[in-house]
Amino acid sequence: MKESLEQQLTEAYESYSDVIYRLCLYKTSNGEQAEDLVQEVFIRFWDYLSKGGEIVNIKSFLYQIARNLIIDYYRKKKAESLDELQEDGFQLSGNDHEDIINQSEKNIAIGIINQLEEKYRDVVYLRLVEEMTMKEIGQTLAITANNVTVRFHRGMKQVELFIKKYENRSKTI
Amino acid sequence: MKTDQKQFNNSLRTFRNIRLTDASKSRIFSKVIAHAQTRNTNNPMMNPYFFIANFFRQPLMATLVLLFFISGGTILAAQVSLPGDFLYSVKTKITEPLTRLTKLNKPAQAAFALKLLDRRIEEMWQLAEKDQMTELAAKENFRLFEKEIQQYKQSEQDINSNDSFKSVAKVNSRLEDYDDLVSAVPQLTTFYQDSTKALLQLAVPVMEISQETSDLRDNDDFEDEKNSSNIMESNV
Image (cartoon, rainbow over all chains, first blue to last red; front, side):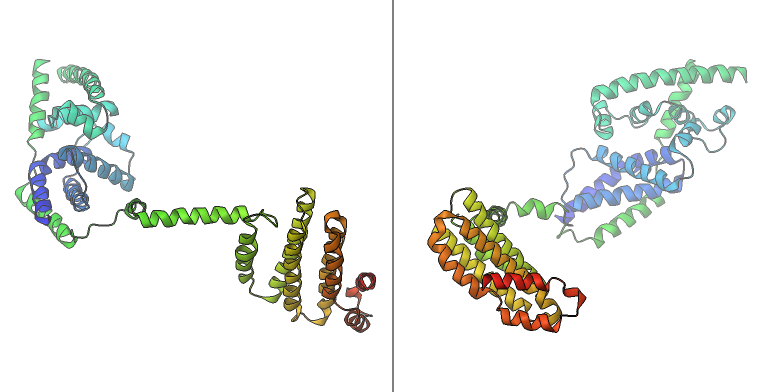
């Protein structure tokens, strides 16, 4: 029984550790903190398994643990409000639009996603970056698949607006 | 716009390719495994709701819980029972003796005895009002009343002489109340004659009162000594 649990843990870690790391990196913008959170996620995953807990969708379950830990992380941090951090976007320095342009390409998409309204943000991230299905996103965020679809489409409308805005500003620069 | 849409998509792909380094991955996994091995998976941690959930699954435990609530309900119902009722014996043979056990000192025991004396009187009044008084109920009630008088006297033995005057007054006033009650119930004519004699025997003799009165004549705290003397004179 114990071997089976360890095997489950190992398989989950091999399959989803990178996914969880990306989520934590996206939320915290800090590599070291993201690694610590990944460790904590799988420790809690193990604790749940060892208590005999049943898991329907491991990926969604790991995401839920990660999101809860990230919330706890921000509560403990108390440095800035979550909204202020997310308004600043995913960036290594500054808040200037020029900095977004000057940064490596991988930041642009995340920076734009972080400009979205909160209710669209996670849906768009999980769909575009992690390529989760609507059903999986619904299970992760505890909302219906229909709701996920609606939020994703509205979120993508906002992404297009930001891209247009970004294009206009880059032309003027 | 196409360029920027393309840029957006490329940046998504780039972010999607972010991975933990091999060293980080290995380091994190080692810590997770170390945590897993320190836990004893053969005895999973008790769910805080585990005991409650399983408690009620055990038929024996469930039966005990049911008995507890039934007995509690019985005791509560017994509190308002009267002589002749089915649950009256629960009150006089179980509840009241158990309560008496919780009275650890003499003053508390004496106060409890007085309380039971009042309760016996009240029970008789209630029976009379409901027109349920019988000689049998009255005799049972009187037997309990007499028992409480004895209990009270035993409890009062340790009280110093300054307070004995007051304590005598307390018990004698209850005797008077009981006598009045019994005399007021027409069904208890025979019982009244018997009980009156018994009540007289229960009362504290006048001689003892007189001695205490003379000792405490100049004490201002005992202004009611005359009242107590009047009660005893009427009994005699």
